[in-house]
Amino acid sequence: MRKSFKPVFLIALSAALTALPARAGDASPLGLWKNLDDVSGKPRALVRITESNGTLQGKIEKVFPAAGEDPNPKCDKCEGALKNAPVLGLVILSGLTKDGDEYAGGQILDPDNGKVYRSKLRLMQNGQQLSVRGYIGVPILGRSQTWLRQE
Image (tube, rainbow, N blue to C red; front, side, top):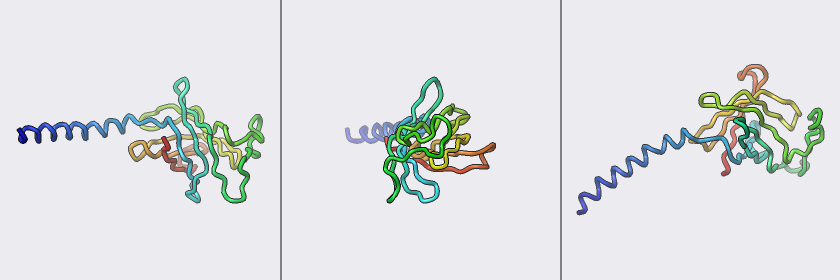
């Protein structure tokens, strides 16, 4: 009786392990992400990415100000309707759509300088990290951050 258990267990284990890569490939950028500063590596904000009408958007849900920084920062360098808008609740990612294994065609707002850049996202590490690239013109003229999945 014990001999028949081992092959069944190994088949079940093999099937479960084979299914793991398929689940990772189905990962989505939807959810809550910790934004890490690309210079210091320290947490800057929590951003929730949602989908509406086939496009992604990301809104700041929490900020992590450094010592001496305003705990309720405003986008004082933003222009137009966003001028002096609270950073908390600010939509910083918009218009991204799935393009192969990445999300592209959107834009990202940098609340620190008020500038809007073209943007693209790519999931990494089985969907636990998100490479976020902001750029002018072509992707090589920009910078990237790695965000960490929180939920």
